[in-house]
Image (cartoon, rainbow, N blue to C red; front, side, top):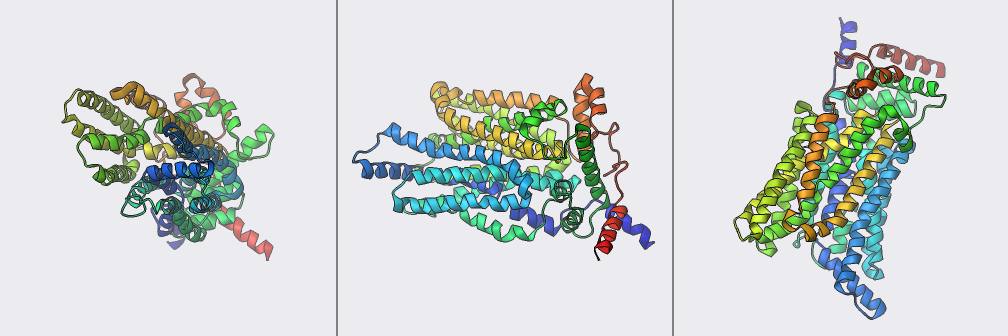
Length: 537
């Protein structure tokens, strides 16, 4: 009885374990949390930093800067974060392949700590250029973490929890935004004497990660498929699942490893991680790549970050006293945090496609109502200011409900181990370029379109909802082979040739949980490991 029941136990899917939960928290607190936190904390000291720029320039040259010149210097400081993020996104792929997912996140903190030191020293050095350099380095840190962390989570989670685990990246991003708004209050670190400490406070979560994350395992898929270390993979998977490594999960990884080797033999090259250029050249991956690029671009071009910028003006027009606006603004961060937590609970029930299309659909609705309210408000209907306030919260809630989290999951689910780092490099580049463009162009959009300034974002949300409704298959609870087959079926006439050419696609959908055909059984794996130990002895 016992001998027959033990294999059944190793074949059951495991849920959340303490090790998995702590691994997620340790990675995220110094990962995507930093992205949200660093976007948020720069808003509170805006006027203080602009005064510092002008005072520093006056001390150097004996003459002050005029308003547009100060604004230009400030814009460069703000834009440096996006440019650093783009550089970090390009670094994330090589880092994650060479050092692994976990060690890449740990090494990534070096950018953050150097940036914090520069900010703390900028007053003594009388150098606003040090703030620019610090924001660039902080951007690099965020760019790396926004790519590596979802990859790490997607490869460490069991299939039936992959969406929920990966979505915690969005939860921690929203938590970072919310906490940054709180810490930036004038009663805390948002005052004139303390703004350097506010900008340097991002070092504390980095230090927490440096102390906590080394105690937790590396991605099992990285250990097996990239490094070829089966024994380390079994140990890591066992720790993450709270006991013995599940047999069927091991079989799935072993099959992917064999398929990757066979694909490399067919091409006549050694198995290695793909480059972004090789993804663009591969016809079998173009649809997946186009989907990921569209999702990452839409996430930034949809205007969610712009509505944070616009919120203070809307609250002021609604009659909120200026000194109270900072407290109301915290509600916007709390809204996105609440929506991301709710979405984390829903994603394994309703699926990725539903949340993504539904989120953009709701954002379309709020854009229409928001534009109508702004038009009526400019015509003298004062009550519309309160409708505009409601639209701000509705728009942010809709964004947090779907696009904020689902976007980061997609590359981990629709690309194999060899293509995944390069796919995240492409996706991250699209995201950071979009953030940079919106940050630079939104003030001009407001000046030229006035009350109609959110119509471009309405167009982005509408096109995104339609595109993902038609082009994105549901990935909930599916293996890579099933998802690849879905994409091939959506290619229509190309399906037959693609299915024959690609060894990693199975012709029939997989009916059973973790059913993987001819994969190496787990008992054979453990016997091989035992024989290796005996040979070593």
